[in-house]
Image 1 (cartoon, rainbow, N blue to C red):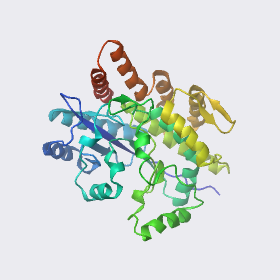
Image 2: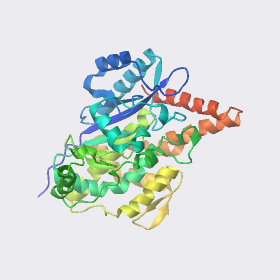
Image 3: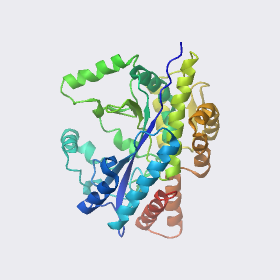
Image 4: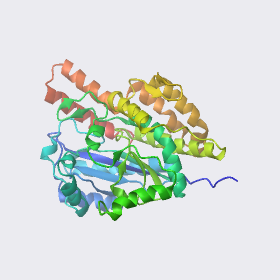
Length: 378
């Protein structure tokens, strides 16, 4: 007997950084008038993040990637326009090239105040932004089953999304330095593999009942069952600087889940591997992005990312076509061809240095690049 197909609705969260229009540094405390204007424009689907220099937007549950595109385009454009009205710019990057986390202030809200108290030094450095993608899967056991399987592909999604090569005025040599910062928090990284929703709940409830945290929203795995919605929330990705790249990552993710569900309908499944093995691919994605091979554990070999991209497009084509997002999935080929945001940021930086600019000047040019790229397609 076939199992009812989930709706595979899509919800996207993006976190932007606010930079001063003159200095290009982060704005540590945006004016209250900015928040008044942006709340009036976008209502409850926009808000602050842990750092005051961040803005988070959320789409509603969308039936298709096309619907998500319409909503995300409007929200990105609105944030950019209102920021400029108040002498700022909005950038979509997971780290700022030269900002000093020690100069930032966290948002004065109960949740964030508790976070600052509990996490101390590790959370003070949390000057990072990401993109989260929720996919609607009402059946909780299916959420767990698909989470176990899709974890294999998290390194691929990270590699394609990388946008955080700089930290504190230095080229870190990593394409996603955000991952290094975030992993300092507890309950991060790859999820455990559970046999059922009941088993997952038992584990979470051990910590809730002990008073360690109040609910599962304090579990910050790279992918997790959402504590607020009947969704499977992918959290591994850096925020993509261009709208098109972000939609492409979201399309790949929802198509992966659809593909895995389709296999399940035919009594098939993707082989699961230990976190030890997947973590190695995650490190390679964090370090090299798309520029070095990942392990294909099915064949036991390092495989060039270009080849993995073509294989991914091929296996996702039927489900992406059914979901109406094949062009967005196919766009990952363009990402690999021209480079991720991280690749392009480093390219701007190195070109500026070669032209005789100082390190500070080169980094400011990277911010200029991010300001313009964030608005492409709006």
